[in-house]
Length: 223
Image (cartoon, rainbow, N blue to C red; front, side, top):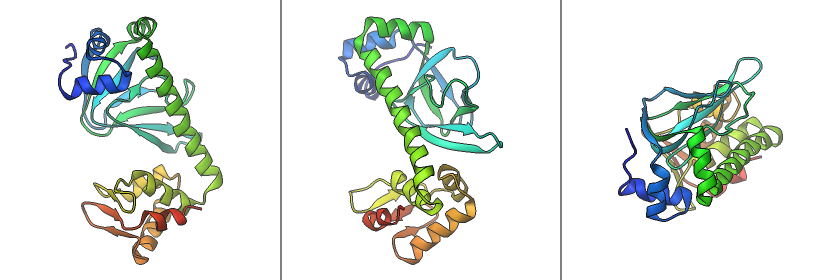
């Protein structure tokens, strides 16, 4: 099924590619719409690359497997992100998995490359996406080498929190196992780190959300 561009989707394409409505529709023309249920593997890193996806709605997670078999969560992809370029490298073991119901515009790689040759906006979007992937992976590497395990948990909470600058909210409340995987540590370490924040009144946790009452105090602990 072809991609219908109207309303929010049209604005999303204009934002991703930085172009007019007419050019957005031209870029969308070769794509077909694909849907992925939660927990569906969208892409295997060490498998063949046949298409490039533009996320229209929902979120996905980039996972990488270590030499000892552990699965590491690298970062999340949301509406506007491109999938299928070089999330963790062609030779890496890993996959991109849908976290929620996800809709995407799917392009055959040849079609997308021809668009990049025709529309400068597509080439620029490719460059921005590759740079963003590099920045995300580099940030993970730096955190692993420079921060303590507890510091990585706090850095991940800071990254996940959104708010007015003084406070932040993570909704739904993060699952400790997933938080530990993101921070490259154990569930026990993540549990102790969050409990310490609660005791100090820096965060408040309920079944629905985790509220960061002071982002400044949280950031002071990222060491």
